[in-house]
Image 1 (cartoon, rainbow, N blue to C red):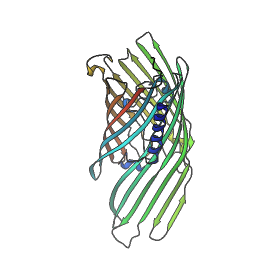
Image 2: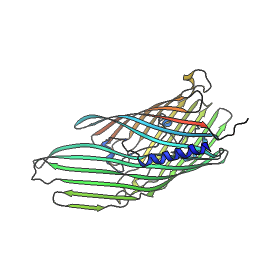
Image 3: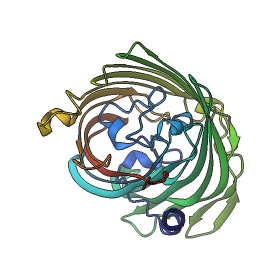
Image 4: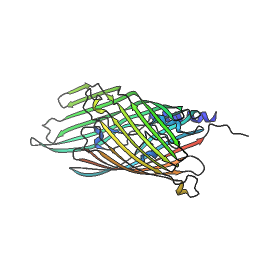
Length: 405
């Protein structure tokens, strides 16, 4: 009964967090395009490995990006994962460069078995997109000096619940249901130094209240006692994005309210594989694609562009039973190459990452750090360099068993 009470308290905490979830995860000027800056929802341990996920199933991490992985958890273990991040970003454009710090709650997730190792449940809250920018550009047109101010804030948040099933000793299937909510605003204000010249303003507001679904599958097998292989795939159907979308066009002479329709989230798929040797060396790779080119945005397709992502990572743990703490730690490296989904974006972004996992001596609880450096050609003449530190505590406690007297 006590265990059930704690689980219900954790679920209540997730719902409470969703009610006040803050989207302040970015200050990037490029987040004014499309739905904002996309978030991968990768657990901290896997971020240190380049963000691989589809082909990974580990009992020490909750992997919400691959719903088939939940049954990898121990059949008597309850897990609770809380992550936060700190980021430093340098922006460079024709006007010079500037630095911005950011910090944010990344995600809150939980996971526990329902029936031995055959069925497992997971739930959590995490961002889908983030919008946050405030900058100005100036110039001269027709002999008049002008300034354009760009401002935006908000984002879309995911609350998910998922189930995973082991239907054979080597096959797992899973599904996540997402409730998407939140709002984002974008404003452009054009003013002239001469009051005789009329300025203008455009204001967009997007308030989302929608559902979507994700499906996953994994094949896994152990060869002998030393070799483990996992193959994984994830898919999401293209779906309408429901909510309220309005656009105001204002000037000193008149104003126009435009009710805009036709927004979708795209077809998404991901495939991945991992190989583990002797529970010491883990190597994994992923490929994913989002078909934004066919998804409606402001009622039109071909406004956004398809987004491909390649990820590769390694993890090494010398000896989990060693007396030397450094030999029980997890050491991770990874790299990612990813396209932008907005047409204003430049060449592909690339990320290099490193991570460390600190196990506790008396339990399965794990503290993880992941450091990621990303170089992004965000738009014409705009370059971003991000250094992001993500840290989490993955609490794992043995609950679901009866003690023998």
